[in-house]
Length: 145
Image (cartoon, rainbow, N blue to C red; front, side, top):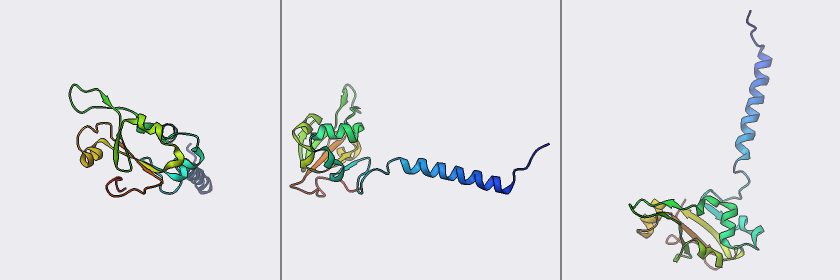
């Protein structure tokens, strides 16, 4: 004989499930400060990292930015992201080692498609845009979200 659950038991089960789902959803990504996203590191995230350089800060906060991506061009290997500091092309990720975290206002990651559209060819690994404290991002140096 099948037993029909009481309304009280069904409501209790629904509440427990709702709390569990809500707890899981709020645990992912809610610790980021305002303005920070998976593609943007803001100064508030960098404040506790004053002893690190920008390369180490990215490794700690958004390690996926540094992953080399396969080139879309035949015969070319994987490419690292191109680094821009205050709108000026600097080179590869190793250029981030000369910037201390406390000198940075924000850093953004651009996908390969967005970087190629904005800056031209040879951005198969995307781009990392760094805005230092002496200069705020402009429409030329940083994409809009």
